[in-house]
Image (cartoon, rainbow over all chains, first blue to last red; front, side, top):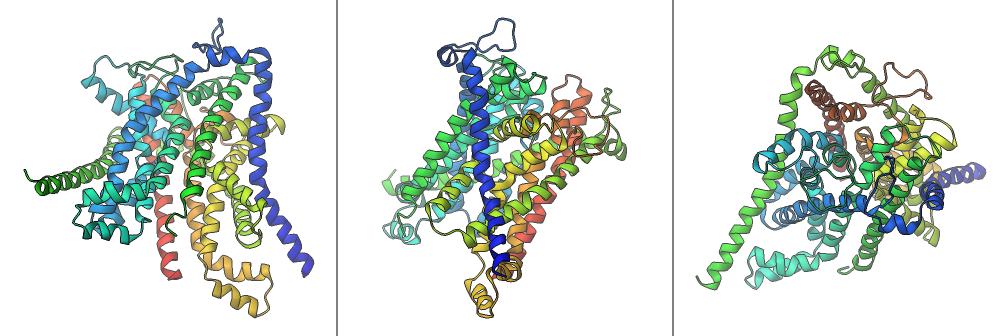
Length: 291
Length: 284
């Protein structure tokens, strides 16, 4: 009996340790292939060159060209999602009737459940042609359309998580502000948002991290041309869509093309890992403010 | 305008803005679904579901993609559920408050934030190359299993946490061992919560494209996989491939495949919400 219990505990512990192995595996694989890559390509060139052309005959390995594309689409997405998502969060928390909040929140969360390949299709076949009627200079593949659609996808991240943060603010604070004669708007911006600021910031950081790692929307709608640019109307390439482009072809193992996707992946991992760690730190530090 | 009037005006204006943004979010969802139905609805037919992919857009179908999606789902269930639920039970019921358990916790929340395409690179390095499984059904399913593991673990922990401790104490008082209590008391009363998490994580897995592209899933597979070592395609792969082609006929086929994918996703989410509501009522 005792032995059986012990064996079960060990088995369960093994299940939990698979998560540690996953992390070790990710870091190991990324580092292993990247080290071979950096034996051939100097890290200075990787960080300072602004051209990224590993698939051409004249090869350049400047990750900045992919980073700028990633930055551009993510920035557009955040410009769309942040004001809309925060306004929705405040509206649902402070203004909307209770029944509204209960039904609207899950409906908005459907936006986050739609597979990203569907959003890519939506961006390319519906949003881009629509934007072209307003702005004829827009090319078929561009970061504007991809960024906007990505923003729509991450609205529920910001609105739901921020609303949770607002909901967690003690009722007494809200009632005190109302008691002093504040309007809902004043209460929201002078009392609730400052009180929920750590939760709101965490939601924004997670949304940024999500945007940086988003793949299919940009792979379908933003093009395949790595360019060091901030022009939203021309084709660009992000870190993620470069990995997709190489993987869709057939890069033989050991070739420099094969290694580039791990170097690009390592760069992406470092970005999202930093953002996630910051959000984790904020969450831990400010979590028990009111308890 | 007096200060009071001004403040009331701003308050009302924000109310309208909030309503506007909330409903435009829903409106966009409606526009998306409407447009996909408008383009693809006529394409969805029994033939479309049972035809092999073809170079001619009007003859092509999603048979291999649907079977591939179902195969991947089945294998992912087999790999991810026992490990995820097991890990969740361990963290909630066995792990003592120690450096080790808080490290496990930080690690899991970090894994949940890693972009899915990085999991693809992990799968490529470990399953495809190191274990030499190639771009097979097995490699794809193992990769997706690792991807959804954090979701299942978190859902399992939440569900177990919600079980009243009085139930557990009653079981211990009757002389049951820890494992007997878990099997006979904890798991049955947290079943609804765990099931909700599992279904949501699976719905995420079948919508994933990026990690499978990296692992080597193919867009054109002219036969149904016979073993777990065969090459495979899934619905999102097929959609991605058709969307990237210039002929308008393929865009229509892509819209048709999207209708099927969305249908599966929404049905799974609906079932998950149904179980969650039922389970929450039972707990109260």
